[in-house]
Length: 87
Ligand SMILES: [Zn+2]
Image (cartoon, rainbow, N blue to C red; front, side, top):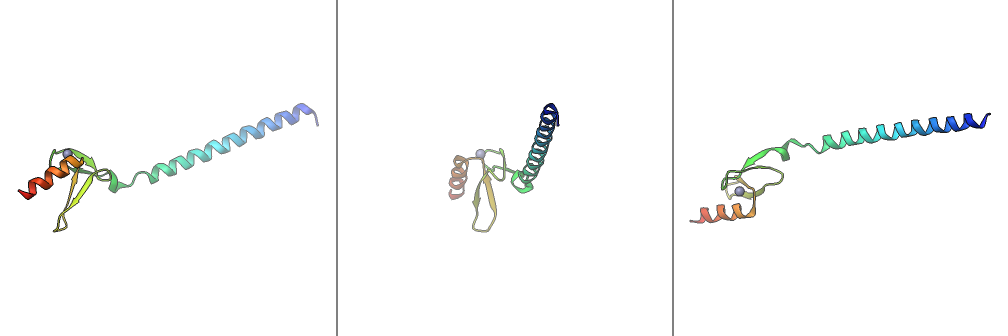
Protein backbone atom coordinates (compact mmCIF):
# COMPACT_ATOMS: atom_id res chain seq x y z
CA UNK A 1 0.00 0.00 0.00
CA UNK A 2 1.19 3.49 -0.81
CA UNK A 3 2.09 5.39 2.42
CA UNK A 4 0.00 8.37 1.32
CA UNK A 5 -3.09 6.16 1.10
CA UNK A 6 -2.55 5.10 4.70
CA UNK A 7 -2.40 8.76 5.76
CA UNK A 8 -5.59 9.53 3.86
CA UNK A 9 -7.32 6.55 5.46
CA UNK A 10 -6.17 7.66 8.91
CA UNK A 11 -7.48 11.18 8.28
CA UNK A 12 -10.80 9.75 7.11
CA UNK A 13 -11.08 7.59 10.21
CA UNK A 14 -10.23 10.55 12.37
CA UNK A 15 -12.93 12.69 10.75
CA UNK A 16 -15.51 9.93 11.13
CA UNK A 17 -14.51 9.54 14.74
CA UNK A 18 -14.91 13.29 15.33
CA UNK A 19 -18.33 13.22 13.67
CA UNK A 20 -19.39 10.30 15.83
CA UNK A 21 -18.23 12.01 19.05
CA UNK A 22 -19.85 15.37 18.27
CA UNK A 23 -23.10 13.67 17.25
CA UNK A 24 -23.18 11.68 20.45
CA UNK A 25 -22.41 14.75 22.55
CA UNK A 26 -25.24 16.67 20.90
CA UNK A 27 -27.70 13.89 21.58
CA UNK A 28 -26.61 13.75 25.23
CA UNK A 29 -27.08 17.51 25.55
CA UNK A 30 -30.57 17.27 24.10
CA UNK A 31 -31.40 14.55 26.57
CA UNK A 32 -30.06 16.69 29.39
CA UNK A 33 -32.16 19.63 28.29
CA UNK A 34 -35.27 17.48 28.42
CA UNK A 35 -34.45 16.42 31.93
CA UNK A 36 -33.81 19.99 33.03
CA UNK A 37 -37.32 21.11 32.12
CA UNK A 38 -39.65 19.70 34.74
CA UNK A 39 -42.96 21.53 34.48
CA UNK A 40 -43.53 21.83 38.22
CA UNK A 41 -40.40 23.73 39.22
CA UNK A 42 -40.89 26.18 36.34
CA UNK A 43 -44.35 27.05 37.52
CA UNK A 44 -44.65 30.63 38.72
CA UNK A 45 -46.08 31.37 42.12
CA UNK A 46 -46.93 34.77 43.54
CA UNK A 47 -45.38 36.22 46.65
CA UNK A 48 -48.35 37.47 48.77
CA UNK A 49 -46.18 40.15 50.42
CA UNK A 50 -44.51 41.98 47.55
CA UNK A 51 -46.52 40.51 44.68
CA UNK A 52 -43.48 39.22 42.78
CA UNK A 53 -43.70 36.06 40.69
CA UNK A 54 -41.14 33.43 41.60
CA UNK A 55 -40.35 30.04 40.06
CA UNK A 56 -41.82 27.46 42.41
CA UNK A 57 -38.54 25.56 42.55
CA UNK A 58 -36.73 28.65 43.82
CA UNK A 59 -39.38 30.13 46.10
CA UNK A 60 -39.33 29.89 49.86
CA UNK A 61 -42.29 27.89 51.09
CA UNK A 62 -44.30 28.41 54.23
CA UNK A 63 -46.89 25.79 55.07
CA UNK A 64 -49.84 26.77 57.19
CA UNK A 65 -51.32 24.56 59.88
CA UNK A 66 -54.34 24.02 57.65
CA UNK A 67 -52.06 22.70 54.90
CA UNK A 68 -52.12 25.66 52.53
CA UNK A 69 -48.80 26.80 51.09
CA UNK A 70 -47.44 30.29 50.64
CA UNK A 71 -44.49 31.09 48.44
CA UNK A 72 -42.03 33.94 48.91
CA UNK A 73 -39.28 35.55 46.90
CA UNK A 74 -37.06 36.04 49.95
CA UNK A 75 -36.73 35.36 53.64
CA UNK A 76 -37.58 39.02 54.26
CA UNK A 77 -41.01 38.60 52.70
CA UNK A 78 -41.60 35.37 54.58
CA UNK A 79 -40.83 37.09 57.88
CA UNK A 80 -43.11 39.99 56.99
CA UNK A 81 -45.90 37.53 56.22
CA UNK A 82 -45.46 35.69 59.53
CA UNK A 83 -45.44 38.96 61.46
CA UNK A 84 -48.55 40.12 59.65
CA UNK A 85 -50.37 36.93 60.60
CA UNK A 86 -49.44 37.20 64.24
CA UNK A 87 -50.98 40.65 64.57
ZN1 LIG B 1 -41.29 39.15 48.03
